[in-house]
Image (tube, rainbow over all chains, first blue to last red; front, side):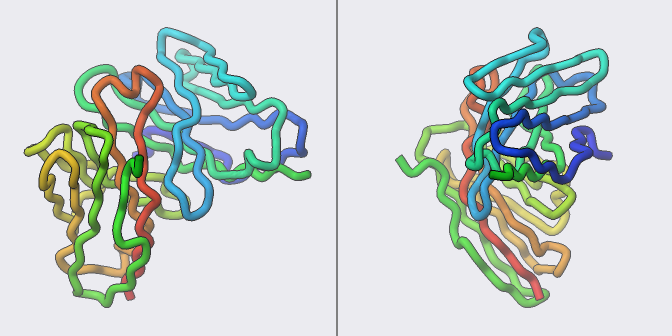
Length: 113
Length: 116
């Protein structure tokens, strides 16, 4: 039972354009969401996060949007750069208790120069 | 500051062999985790340790054991390796409230394990 889903395994975007990565979740107990970026042969690194009390969080070129009623979040990258080519994972955690994260299956983003 | 260090980086095992994956963090984090990454499956939690002296099963614990040796170290053991355990294994750590602060986990660089 995949509680966090990324339905697009891959995405190609031209340099300078907007990249939009999507993520859906099924567990209504999730209250905190994060995006991680992963380059080959490296561990994932934290990118941006959002609490369920917000619907948008912005950090430079990266913006995460959360639609709680639809159980959907998205990551926008504007403008896209070649260095953004990586695998992106969304992750979610519940409100209380330990810090366990449930990850999605990942989307491989390729930025075309 | 090394962060999270995993050893070895690569390993090939024969079916039935055993091995231990080592993980150490130098950030004084309380919680540590072992994940495996497989194509099309994302990152799946094997075991975690919320604090020194405690361990709990994650989503896919079968075939694995863990030891939280001290606050710094969290090892993952395969007692009798199977081809289905061919994967990339990641160790991670976090401090209380880190997800609220937006920091999330700090991951190691991974161990690529092949079981033949």
